Length: 285
Length: 212
Image 1 (cartoon, one colour):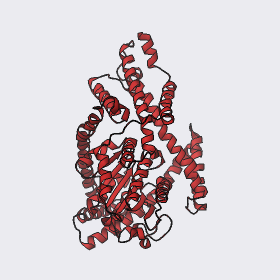
Image 2: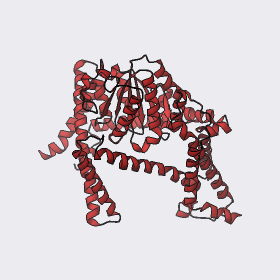
Image 3: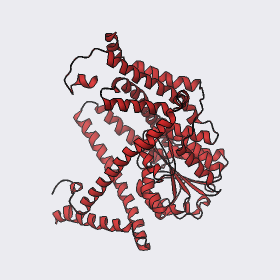
C-alpha cells in the first residue's frame, strides 16, 4: 500500500492534464446550471450604474490584454450591456496597447447590438501611451490627451463627449484590469484627485489584493474573476460566457481539491526516508 | 563638465522636480495645475522614448544570443522575424486593424497565443497542486485549508454542497486577507516614500547608472 502511494505520488502529469481538460470540456458541453449567489461587492457596481440617470457619463477602461480575455471580456460585455440599456453615454478606452483591438471590438459590438451610434451615444478613445500618466492627463484635459478617437474623429466634436473637459465631468469609471496600470492607478492618479466614483473588475488572481481598497470605499465595488462576471450577468438577467464558464470552473476546482486531498493522503502513507534538508529530494517531497 | 552633466545636473533636476511636484499636489492654483498638465505630457513623451530604448535593448539581447549561438538561439530569430513582420505589416496598414493584415496578426496570432499561454496555466496549477501542496507543517496545513475553503466557496457547486462555504470564503477575503494586504500595502507605501525622499535628496543615486 505504501509503495503504491509512493508510485501514485509520481503519477505522470499528463494524466492530470487529461483530468483538467475533461473537467473543463464536459460541463461546457453539458452545463448543469447551478444558481449563482451574488456578492455585495459585485452588486455595488451594478447598483451604482442603476442609480445613474440616463445621459450620465460612464467610462470603461479595458486595461487588459488577450491573456486575460476569458475572465475580463465577459465582464466588459455585461457592463456595456447594462450601461447601454440604461442609456448612459459610454466612453471606452484602454491603457494596455495589446488590448486595443479587443477593446474596440467589444465596445462597438455591444453598441451595435443596442443600436447605439458611434460618436453620438458612445466614444472609443483607443490607446494612448504613458500608463498612469494618461490618467493624470485626462484629469487635466481629456481632449488634449486624446485629440482624436480610435477612428480618427476629433474628440472635441464628438456628441458623446459634449460638456466633458476632464475626468471631473465623468460620473462613473470602471477599470477592468489584469495588472498595472489598472484599478490602483485609476484610484491613485484619478479618483483621489479628480473626484469621480470608481469601480473595479479584475482577474481572480489580483482580486484579493484589492479588498483593502473596497473596504475603505476607495473603490465602490469589485467584480472578481469569471465568478464576478457570472454574478454581474445574473444581476442583469443575461446568460453570457461568465455563467457558462461557472460549471467548468466548479468542476475544475473540485478536481484540484480532489488532487490536493489525494496528494496529502499519499504523502502521509508513502514510505519516507531521511533526506537532507533543502536537497532536491526534500524539495520534491 | 562631463561630471557635471553626468552627475550634478541630473541630481539638480531630480531635486527641483521632486520637490516642486510634491508641493504641486497640495496647490490647486491654475498655474500649478497648468504645470501639472504640461509635465504629464512631457512624461508621456519620455515614456515613448523609453519604449524605443526597450525595443533596442530587446534587439541587442537577442542579437547576442544569435551571434553566440547559445541554446535556444532559434527562438531569438523568431522574436526578430515576428517583431519586424508585425511592425512592417502595421506600417503598411497605417496602424488600422479593421480588415487589414495587422488586424489579422492581432486576432489570429497574438490573441490566440496569449490566450493559449494563460489557458495552459490551469493545467500546470493542477499538476503543481498534486505534487507540491502538502501539509508538511502547521503553517502549510493552514494554507491548504484556506485554499480548499476558497476553492469551495468561489464556485456555485461548492456553495450548493456546503452553503456556508461562500460566506466563509467572503470572510477570508474581507477580513484575514484584507488585514494582511493592508499591512503589505502600508509597508510598500512607506518604502516608496522613503525611496522617493532618498532619490530627491540625492542619497539614492543608482538610477544615474552606477558610475560616480
